[in-house]
Image 1 (cartoon, rainbow, N blue to C red):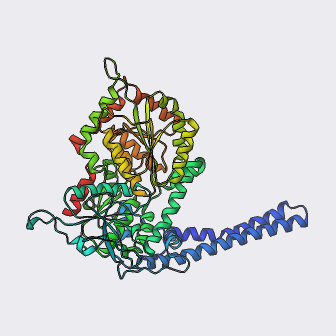
Image 2 (image 1 turned 45 degrees about the vertical axis):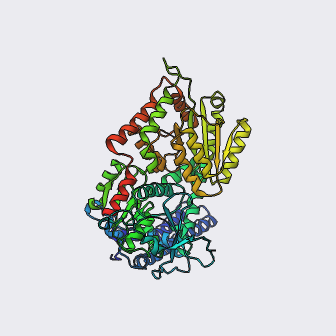
Image 3 (image 1 turned 90 degrees about the vertical axis):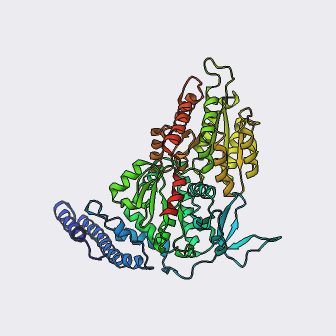
Length: 591
C-alpha cells in the first residue's frame, strides 16, 4: 500500500502546526490590552510562550511519529511477508473502505510485540511437536512441544508421547476409498470460552471417527506462546477489575470490547505473523478448525487451504473474521452484518451455535426431564415441588465475583426452604473457591465439595436418574487445573435447570439460561440472541433483577422455564440450531 499521507491528514497537520503561532498572538494581544502592570504583561507573555512551546513539541512529536508509522507499517506487514492481506480484505469496495490508521496500528504492534529492541519474526524452522493421549477425553490427541527436559514414560508397550507424523498417519475405520482425514482443532487458552468451543468441536470430530488433535498454542512452550500469555494476563486482569470496581472503569472496558474495527484486525494479524512457527509443521491441506481468530490468522498467513474460523459472540466486528478462511457465524444477525460489512460471501457461512456433541445429542431427553421438574406441584399435580438447580460457573478470567456472592447471599432463604439448589463451579480459581467458602460460612449454608473430574461424572450420572437429588442443597466444584473447570460446566448442564452465567459463549448452549451481569458490552448482544430464540433470559444487570426472574422460574404456575425447554427442542429438531460445531468439522473437511 502507498505511504502517501491523505489530504485530510495533511490539512489537519497544517492546522495543528499553526496553533503555537496563534497562541503567541493571543497572548501578546491579552498582554497589551488587559495587563495593568509590566509584571502582568511579563507573566502573560511567558505563559503564552510556555503553552506555545508545549504545543510546538506536540506538533513535532506528532509529525515524527506519523513519519515513523508510515515506514513502520509497511515494514511490519512484510516482516514476514505472508499470504494474509488484511488491507485487501477490509477494503473490498467503496462501500467498506477502511484505510489504515498507520500510527495506531504500528504503535500498538510496537508496544505489544516488537518491544523497544525490535523483535524479528522467525518463519523457520517450525517448532517440533509431539502428541499425547488426553487423560480427560477419550480419543483426543493433545499437541505439545518436544522437549528433552520432559521425562518420557514407558508403560509396557505404550509410550506417553507420539511423533506428530505418526498421529497424522493413523488410519481410520472405513474402506480404502474413504479414508477419514485427521482434524486439527487450533485454539488458545485465553479464558475458558475459546477452549470450551474447541472441546465442543473436538467432540464432534471424535464422534465422526476422525483422528483429532487438540492444538493449543499455549501448550507449545516457546517464545511465540510467551507473547500470547502476556496479552492474556492483561485481558484477565482488566476483566476482573472492570467487573469488581464497576462505574467508569466498567463502562470504559465495556466500550473497549466493542472496538474491534479493521485496525484491530490489522493489529491482530501483525501479532499472528509472529506466531507462524506454532502451526507450520502440519501439511497445508490439513483440515483446521480454529476457535480463536489469532489461530485462523496464523493458518491463513501460512497458506493452509482447509481452514474454518468459528466466529464468537453475536456482535459483528472486523477483529473476529479472517481472510482466506471460511468464517462461520452462530446466528443470522452476524451473518447478515458481515456480508454488509464486505466479507466475501464465499468466505462466510451461517453454521449454528457452538455446542458439545453430548449436550446436543441429549437435548430431547434433558429438556423433557426439566419440563417435568418445572411442572411438579403445579395446579392439579400430585408430585412435590422440585428445587430449581442453578449451575453457576466462574469465567476463565475470574470476573463477576461480587455479583455472584451477592446473589448467593440474596438466595439463602430460598435455599433453606428447598426452592433453590446451587452448583458452584469455581474452576481452577483459588480466589473464587475461597470466596465461595467464605460466603457459605457467613450464611451458614451447608455444602458438599467435588474436586475431581471423576467426581463430577459420578455426580452427573447419579442426577440423571430423576428420582435422585444432591446430598446437600449446595455443591462446590473446585479443581487444581483448568480442564476440569471447563468440562464440569458441560457435564453439569445436563442435570441443571438453569445455567446462571454472563452472556458469553455459554449464551448459545442448549439449556435454559439466566444471564447475569456482562463483562464487556459486546456480550449484551449474546443475551439478546438467547432471548429472541427463547432459550434464555435477557441480561440481569442487578441482583434484584436476577431474583425476580428466579421467582418466575420457581413458580410452577408460570410457564417461562418450561417454554425455554420447549423452544430448545424446537430449535434443535426443526432448525438444527445447535449443530454449529458439527457443521464446522464437516465443512473443514469438505472445503
